[in-house]
Image (cartoon, rainbow, N blue to C red; front, top):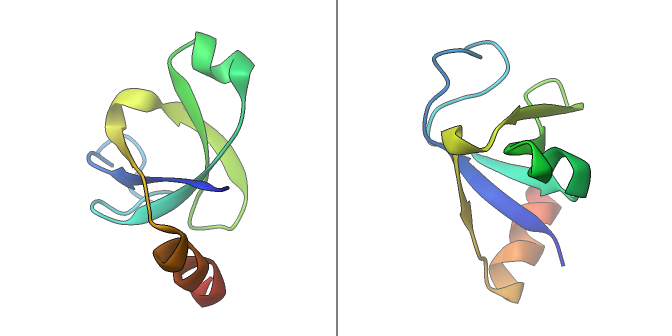
Length: 71
């Protein structure tokens, strides 16, 4: 199962993130210890960002499949 989050504040990363956009979050337990998320940004690469600028949201299986197909 994939994790997703919405960007709530892109003020420090305006070229990497779009406010109110859905991003795929990759598992990174070490980053989580430091209050960070590993997200796939606008470049298609994964980077660490502060977790407080995102809101993780659960998606139904059907919605998750549609989102992944649209990527």
